[in-house]
Amino acid sequence: MLEYKNALIDELVEKLNLQPISIEPALVQSAQDIASFEDLKLFIERFTHMHTPASNLAEELEEEVDILVHKLKFIPTETRPKVLLLENIDPASPLQSALITESIRIAGGVPLEIQEYKDADILLIKQDEFLLYGQLPQFIQQEEWSSIPAIKNNKIYIIKKDDFANVPGKDYLLELEILAEIIQPKYFIFGHHGVDWINFDLG
Image 1 (tube, rainbow, N blue to C red):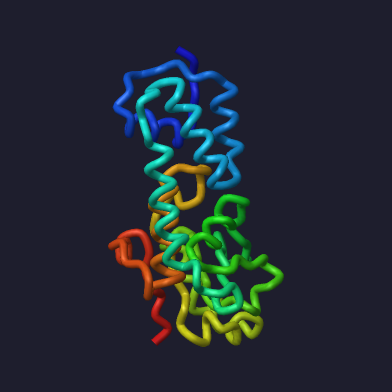
Image 2 (cartoon, rainbow, N blue to C red; image 1 turned 45 degrees about the horizontal axis):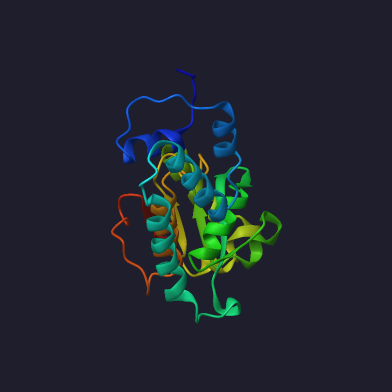
């Protein structure tokens, strides 16, 4: 059996109740190259066609994503919150990938680059919590950050899911739901608050 290490493939093997299987290196590489939902859907279709042709896993995932998109389709882009996702705050550094950028859009937000930080309506932080809680009070008092809308309006959220956005496509729907709950709370409640994400209350 060929050796592979890819958490998305492991996830699919488990979901499809497969026995240990041989994985082509090219398939592992294509999993690592996933940069959009369309890439993910095509990868799942390819994987299931090879190992469980009767599976409709890709179609089921697409249906769930379509539900999110449909609920938000009448919200104009100009009224959607601008979202900045950080993986560290000391120094401030963004958590960026093509897939997570697209996911923020699907979840109802407008993703920002780090140089646009002053426009952030929502600040998402994915960082080791032990370090984060020691750094946050000082961070939000820094002159360049204290006046951004997200901090002024108490819209700081901490992602607790350990491997959030670490592996392209892994836990895709869960991570999309986390983003949707935070970004568009009037439309989505999936039950992830308090488990996979929390508010950081400035009060």
